[in-house]
Length: 384
Image (cartoon, one colour):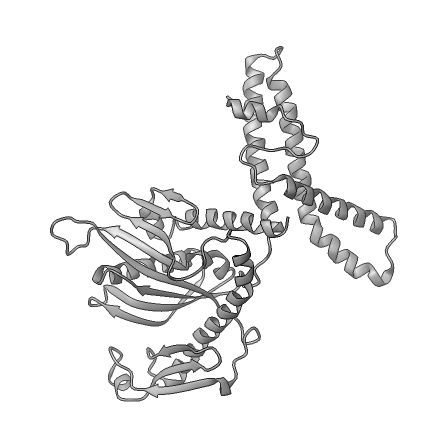
């Protein structure tokens, strides 16, 4: 039932920290949890003994509330450790029948699984919060190297994210797109995805996505490699980012491409430049100049917001080489290999042989969740 490593672990002293197999709770993090738990108990005792002045009641109550979830999870985790020690005593005993041993093994595995779940929840509670996580997001997909195949893959990826958004009950609104190959491919597409925690779930999608497959036009069955770039930008409110009209340069021009006679014969297209940053957004999909302006401003506000967020986090990222990628569009983050039914995320060396469910959107969380967990765990390095 137990490996040599597991048996050795079970014999460890639990006086300081119980190191579960594959534990995420490091000794330093364990000390922090003990300290937070002691703070919680001390505040609770003060409140119960009426030792808090009325003027400080609100702040103390809030601090206690903030600590309560972490303290409760840590206490549950400690209880799991204690139960595992008791079960080990039972399993190593000589006077127990086989049925009892089998029951103890089953219970051991159940508690071990529960302990790891508690660890995940603890890390979520302790990790630094990204204020943009709860925001909606703007998705940009652009075909890269690979010609027609890159355009086809852009369309495939857009469908994947659209289906994923439907499963999450998020709203999918196309702001702009440039079609190729008679609508079968996309040169680029910009989408507003509205809902709760959109950016927090999809923010790790930013970067270069590579596809390896045999194109439909390939007569000799050779595998081609193509790339697209994905950018996920948090959608700020007008309060988060205020853009002055004096900071904008707006150019109006005649739209090109599909869209109807009215689009092509009026100056409905808009090119909006944010003078302080030099960021430029162009929008021409709507027949109305006002609608194109509104869409351009929405995307521009997201780009300005992301630029400020990047400046804030750049120093922290450069001080410790621990982030999941740089978030740069030029960084290759994932490969989709169709002949091998394989998807590999290069940032965490994760390989899954379930390409179809992922491309349909239904299996995308199987990549996103390990990324979230890894990032949250690594972010605790700044807090230990």
